[in-house]
Image (cartoon, rainbow, N blue to C red; front, side, top):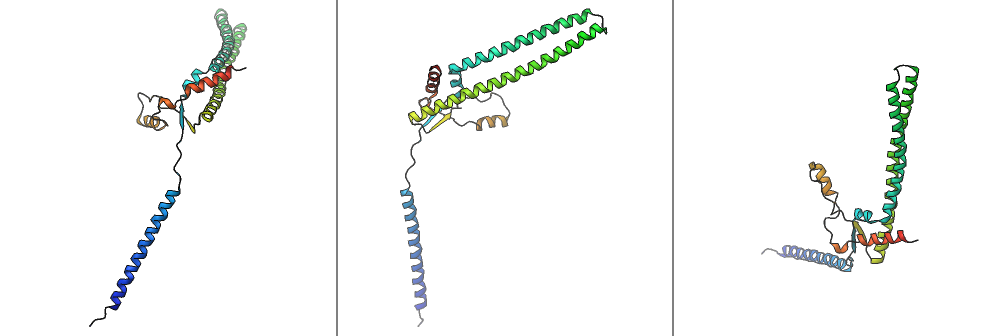
Amino acid sequence: MRNHRPARALTAMTVALAAVAIAATSLAWTNAASANAARPPAQPTAVATVDLPAILDGLEEKGRHEAELQAVIQTSQAKLDDLTKRLENIQADLEALPRDTPEWRAKFYEGLELQQQAEVRKQTLTQTISLQRGESLRTLYLKIESGITKIAEREGYDIVLLDDSKFPLPQQAADSNMERAILSKTVLYAHDSVDITQAVITLVNNEYRAP
């Protein structure tokens, strides 16, 4: 008669190991469930959006900046017009004088000097306009940013996003440019109820009007 004790012992050990494995797995699942249950649910995030170009267009202070810039342009343009008129007079004198005479050469060099002055003034005006517009945009943006912050803190918004869903895609563009334009968008849809554009315009304009 064969001895079955070793086989029975092996079976008992296998059953015991299986029970330990099942117990360990159950404990792991229990711990994971407990950890998940202990984690609090995420709080809802209050989001608002703004249409930045519309805000810029609606600011009363922007009109003052544009008027100041136009005054600079008109003053510089008047100086350029004066140089242009003098150059026209020199050109008429050159046509009337005998060529290659001392008088003609003197007038010719005078015209070259005035032409160089005119080119320098044109470049200076272009740079002045660019710098002044950049400074104006920076000033207005900082006031818009301050207004958005005040409204967000007052109304309890956690995030305020630039709503670029209204920015149109190019009608015709290479595939890479079109893909870049699409992927650069951050807001694909926003309901009007989360838009605070007009509130920002009103606040910033009221602060501008305040003494």
